[in-house]
Length: 218
Length: 218
Image (cartoon, rainbow over all chains, first blue to last red):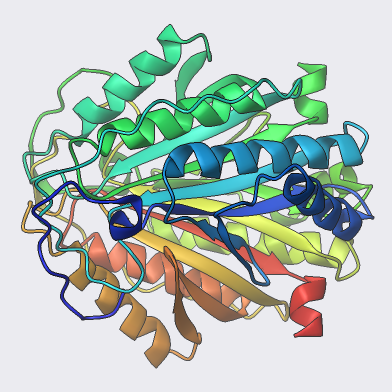
């Protein structure tokens, strides 16, 4: 969010140029939450999933970025592993992750990208975690050229989620998803990356809940 | 997110027409999280803060809307009370709230509003809660006319936050705020409503953390 102006990109932008990355926070609803969080982060690191990632944790959330392709795959594989590990470490208790995925607005530049070559990343592929999630998801195409068609992008993304079996139903300001943590996160990431092939700056937020007593009762 | 087209508004839009509202989720990091959440919601209701609000809780989050002015004031007063009550009920333990504030995209309409009379709501005023928060905040002007100046709105909002003493520093994809829960939430709401006087559809997300052991150590 500085005022430095970025040079316009004329070739296909890399993940690094687009500032592809995420912030997430992890919320185990238990007294030993510190142990669960640190253990889950360790588990993902031990599984080799932090390779080529830049990870910076502060007192509210964790930033994860990468300059190594495929960026989307690396980010989501790590995130799914962390959520699943936190679920296991809290014995299936209630854990929520809040995730912000961003592309097209790197922290150190203004957002006036004129990108003529937006990359077309491959769909994310992650093994099922065995952990079921209920999620609420929002998708924000931010530089959509002013024709006000951002709802088209969003409706396309929701239709795609329905086709892949991650049940999608509308709610105020969000879309509800449910399924394996890996499939929910892959759906969100593919939609975000897919809109990113047409719109330079795209942000998506998703709240992923596992082991909720409300869901179990429902 | 239906495909029904909304009639263009030519007078100053009401909060109801703009679909002003929020979703939030509350995460006490303790074994008795259900008791803390339900108790905090009860406390805010007992204090009369649910008057004129529509509140719908599902398994992931809670939607709050209102058709009664001043909408922003009602929403934020309720939210600040809930977060402070959850902090008290968990004896100052770690509680996180994730909040989505939205205006200009009601659930039952498409987002192609052409609003000629955007309202100018008064700043939110809430008594300090006595509970300190660390927060990360993102602001998304979604229908900004295609001139790509959404960073200007965001930079103005950050400058305003700095002026009012809610220390604001940049991070990847978010701005860090700290201060009393009430002042942090008022800052976020005023920025969101302020951009909403110029941009019809504005969303803001904020993660509000109280009682974090990381913050205490820092």
